[in-house]
Image (cartoon, rainbow, N blue to C red; front, side):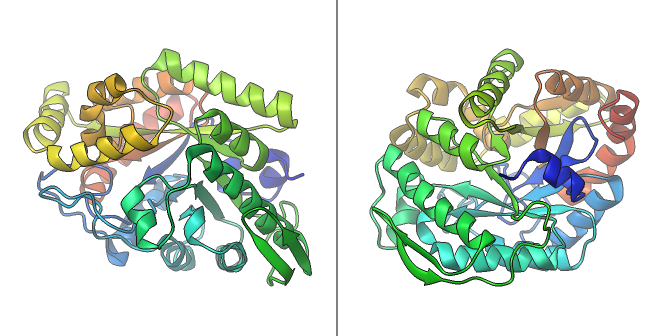
Length: 374
């Protein structure tokens, strides 16, 4: 069984010595994670993503995680309606970088496990081991219907995903795989090349499962559970819960990542004014309502009251915990975030290319002083 020590020995960025790992989220999609009509130079193009990757790599960030999207959410922005495939995205960026970790987010029901195995190991070799999969079972019904498959019941999705993952994981190890499951069947399957690092035998795996079935799937197969924090207290409880589950039920160490929209400016007033501008004044509330309507129906994990309360957070950055203020205030809040026990955060911004230089120049040194970064 692959352990965190194996990835650490292989020099994987996600297992380096930084107490709080950092990445960005959603740069392969239009508007990225901010559901807003606010002005931005950001475009979901390869050229823009290379610029972002270079800025991250120069400042020592760990990773970039894309969103798997097949259609937009309507509204004036048709939020995320323009989107790059996450496998070819990762392969292309891996080829022009040397340090960053890239993930491919995949909706498991849309991709044959043999094809997924081949694509993942190809990119893993291109990147020399700086690659992983973000496993999603599918939740947006109109997207699933595009593929001619009905949306499976919530727990059934994870039963399907378990069969899919068992096939992929076995193919990473050996050839001649035959599998006769309830949902999936393969006969004498082969896949070469194998994963790049012999120490790990597979890419890094992350999953945002948060239901009972989802957490067990993540604890059994993955290296990180991705979750959205309502506040620091509940965030600390989530981290404790998932780590204990992995240790007690599966004898594994499970890391945790969360997401945070970040606005950092020279003064607190500037930061709060901009947050109010892009969220409350320029937010695409129609697209936000469309997202929340689907999530409320399809997810077993959240109440209608929670979605009403956190719609502003969806506008700000896909429901992440907002961090707004001066460089010193932002650094202090990231220290508090780290104190929950979470291993890393995917930070989201309205305009990555415009906002990253200030964050790198002013916040990163403070995180190093605080002991969160080497």
